[in-house]
Length: 390
Image 1 (cartoon, rainbow, N blue to C red):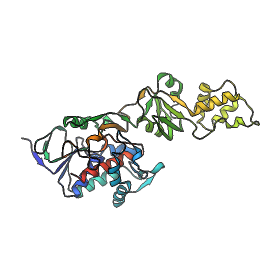
Image 2 (image 1 turned 135 degrees about the vertical axis):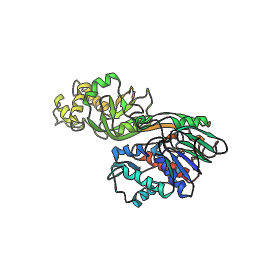
Image 3 (image 1 turned 180 degrees about the horizontal axis):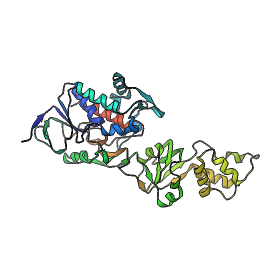
Image 4 (image 1 turned 120 degrees about the horizontal axis):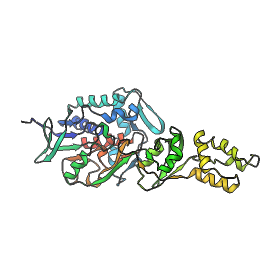
């Protein structure tokens, strides 16, 4: 007969949001169990930021998040800030540094962050159950979770099972299924922060330049990001492209400014500059990587260097318009956009409005951060909000 374990709160998922929730609840004297289906905690924490874990962003604002309700994240983000998480990191003497645009990374390894969270769980008397595959979760007087290694009961159930991104480390649709089972609405998920795949024609034109990168402004759907773009063997990646990908939906166009704030044909406006097509190569190479500049002129170069031809080249360089064939999908997506409809949840506690005691936090909710530590900050903030409420 299966062993039954009783707790005050059960947290499904031992990632960033789940662990933060368990710590906050445990510190309030709640008896908390974290049920994790993998053989270790925090797999996504360990691979994040190239193994260095971009654990927050000091410039975190509600505008850095994508949601069907742009106001939903404000309450949790205001009540657990980057400064709160940094204080925890400093309490554990973890060395860290700021990279570009307010992104904070560990000096050594993401293991430092996971070790800190595990230590905080121990101090808060949180029980951790690894290799615990949940078969079903039902509700009688309490929530009853049946797993391969026993039965767990509690009046509060927190779902922190993440999204669909990176299935090779165990991502599943479990959280969405559970939400539907309890009658909550889902906003259709899609891969976010993901490389774009070019159509065949554009692949033939550009993809032999794999590895070439340039600073650009990528725009789509009223959003724009100025960061690096990288050409890959199937399309485009790099921070600017990953950022805009969260807003892109087929068959929209993405417009790329290859020379932000610069006038690439300026030299030709000077009467002293010789107006020869060969001079164009030298000029464009000042703004773009050599191979890309040469290819750009091969494809878009003017037949002459008259003013109207130069105007056309200038315009094209600032409005390179591509229609992606798709994305690299959940395998390469850093996050899952969409998820549990925020209209179903309390913005203050993350508790279901219709099912008392049922909470959803982290990536499974329809709140998606920009690249650069914002998704971790949402995990910490939503986890803390639920942990203070269970």
